[in-house]
Structures are given as C-alpha cells and as structure tokens.
Length: 363
Image (cartoon, rainbow, N blue to C red; front, side, top):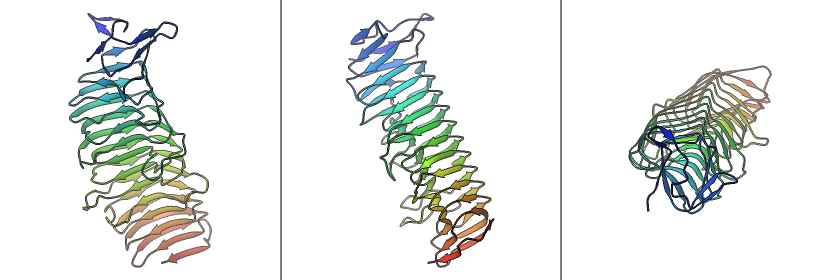
C-alpha cells in the first residue's frame, strides 16, 4: 500500500494521527512506521517525531515536497529518499537521523530527473552519508547549505554517478561536517566528494576528522570551484583531484582553503593525482594554507599554477612529479625538504623564513 502524509488541508496545519502510522506513543508524541511512506508538505507545528523501523528507504519525497521542522529517524537505513523526476523539493530546519550501520543515509537523491532540490539549515546524523546521490541519480539544481552533519564513517556530501557527467548546477556552501569514526580510507570518509558533476561551487564549508580526503574531485567533471573551506584532523589528503581513465576532467580553482593534518599524517595537503590516467590539466591553487602533512603540495605531470600558498610544518614543501611545470611562488615554514622533483619537472619558486635541511631533492 502507498500512503501520503499530509499536514496541510484547507489552509490548516493538522496532526498526523490519521496518516497510517503503525503506532503512536503519546508520551513522546512519536508516530512509528513499519513500511515505506511518502511525505509531502509536512510542517511540524506540534513537536511530533516520526520513526521508521521496517524499510531501508523510510520516507519518499515526490514532486514539490516541502519538509519543515521535522524530527525523523529511520532505524533501518535511508531516512529521506528522492523519487524519479521530483522537482522543487525543500528540506529545511529539520532533524534527520539514520543511526543504522549499513545503508545509513540521512538524505538519498539516487533517482533520475531530479531538479531544484534544496537542503538547508538541517541537522543530519548518519553512519555513512549526510547527502548522497549515486548509481542512477541525476540532478539539475541542488543546494546543500547551512547544515550541521554528524557522520560516523562515510561522507558528508557525496555527488557521484558511474554513468559519467550527469549532475549540474549545484552549490554546497556553509555546512559544518563532523566525521567522528575511524574507518573509511581513500574511498570513503570525505567531507565533500564530487564526481560526474559540472558547475558545482563548494564554498565555505568546515570539516573535522575526515577519514578520506577532505575535499575530493574526480573523473569526468568540469566548471567547478573550491573556495574558502576548512578542514582539521585530516587523515588523508586535504584536497584530492584526479581525472577519468579516458582523459576526461578539467582543472578547477582551489582558492583560500585552510587544511590541517591529523597527527602523524602520511598524506598530502594539496594533491593533483598523477597515475595511469595522467593528471588533470589546468589546476590552479591560490592562497591556500596547509599544515602538518607529509607533503604540503604534490602536483602532477601537467602545467599547474600555484601562487601564494602557505605550507607549514610538512616534511616536504612541494613535491613535483611526472615532468609537470609548476608556476608561481609559495611560502614555506618548517619544511625539512623544500622541493622534491622528478626528472624534467620545473618548479617556479618559493620563499622561506629559514634554510631548509634540503633545498632540492631529486629522484
């Protein structure tokens, strides 16, 4: 059976007592559900709580859905899920919790044809994902702004699709992302991950404790920007950029970000990947600060613009690889090896307040 929870009728806000809930706990004002439901135009004016225990996908949001002030928990997996071709959906000022250890997403937008989705000023609590689009998802128009996310081991925001370049027109701004667990690794635990997306602005986010790269861009993506973000206790790279196997993917500006490694880090603050797929061409790094990484900045085989970056307390200041040209001057402090290069790599220059142990190391 399919149910719709309607909180607005004839201009009046009503309770959900007749919504088809499996049970109601008056002491906590909680409506419990054991099967998948649909939510549309739900404004919580009566301090109600909704819980689900019987479905991996608890509540569907169809075309035009508006959720405000909700307190919703799914003990079995995904809390809010987009439906195909949903447009003009707003999730605002709500508490969305998904404490389960598998399939645990606060908001899942893995549906095709989604347009103009707004997720703003919410508290998102999940084991694996705060906001996820993956597998079959395609989105044109997404705002994820002003949310606080508590994530155990996955990603705060993950924009992805193996079907390549399908996501467009997004702003991920002003979110506080706290990753509290210890697992994850190079393929999980990002604060923000972007793949298969274009025209995406990642601006002014604050992350703590990412298990994977704090800000991860990969594959067939272009016309994106990463500006004014912070990340502390980074266990992997601060910024990671890689290209797709067939060479697709364009460089993007990385400007004014502040990144601090976890103690004992073996990772890199600013990384342009050089692997079997090559490196992204046209990466621009300006005015970033990195602290405590093994390598402050590692650039790939293509031309990279690197200006006025501050590299502090890293084992290596700049690591050049793959015969790439690195243009610009950066500031270094307390970096024992200032520059490491491979054959044919060109490094523009740097300024330091003291003599490094090794000025230039070659491989």
